[in-house]
View 1 (tube, rainbow, N blue to C red):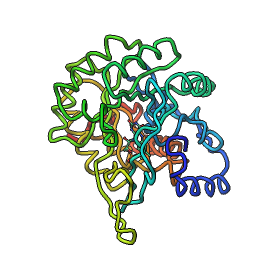
View 2: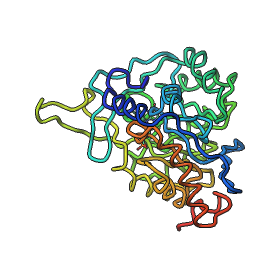
View 3: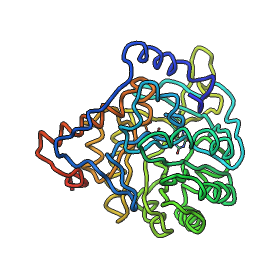
View 4: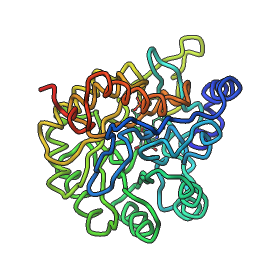
Length: 333
Ligand SMILES: Cc1cc2nc3c(=O)[nH]c(=O)nc-3n(C[C@H](O)[C@H](O)[C@H](O)COP(=O)(O)O)c2cc1C
């Protein structure tokens, strides 16, 4: 993966095995009258399934075996105004039921991204959501302004990365700062704005309300939970950053709880994520109040997780005689 170049060897090995075994995935688009369309701030997605930022590159790495046309949207790796080198290695470690990463938002910067990644994604019939990171409000604004000229459908503003010292989480753990940065970004954004929340807070409902007050069009959650792993053989931290963000199935119950709380706090649509591996997991988030879902860590060991989830949701709708996916959103109260 471009995001974690050099230190996602395990994930890459798994991807190679999958590639050898499976070939290109294709989703049966004949959904027999089912309506899986989702509207996010005026942008219509063909279904509620998207990739989680940082786990799918900009789609190219997976496109040999995942038909990107089948996804509701591709959410790109976070991009900043200038290239960021990321943190020292090792930057990832396996944890029980998931993984821990401290990539530190390595990215090539907005200019390379616009020239290389957007034209690639434009070839597909899926929506493009660009995840934006920055150290200061000015950094975020520079990227948002640059993207105004690009054929991008939505922006996702990452104020929740636990692995960078400045920016990111500094905005995402204080409701006042979160509201302020949302308001700033909204002044310059041409596309609708998704604010991505951190679970590393005391009251997620308060954070969701803060970004809604700042003018966010959509809210996404959760980013990773700050963790620590110690390698007892090396008698050292498993990742050089000492702490990392924990993701994968182990965090799913926390994510579902937070999506439920956010859904009861705000009116704007919610994109739920955190440990989703299949349709059953995705449906938990939808029933808790998410209009759409993102799949992250699962892509590393099952690159087909997104398309399988699309199919599984359709199957569930057939079994439960649900015509519109909207009928399921937030019905467990
Ligand atoms: C290797 C890795 C890199 C990530 N990079 C980003 C990023 O650049 N921007 C962002 O907003 N979230 C990033 N995330 C967080 C994910 O998008 C997602 O919020 C989180 O992993 C929870 O979902 P999951 O359990 O399905 O992975 C990253 C996660 C992982 C595992």
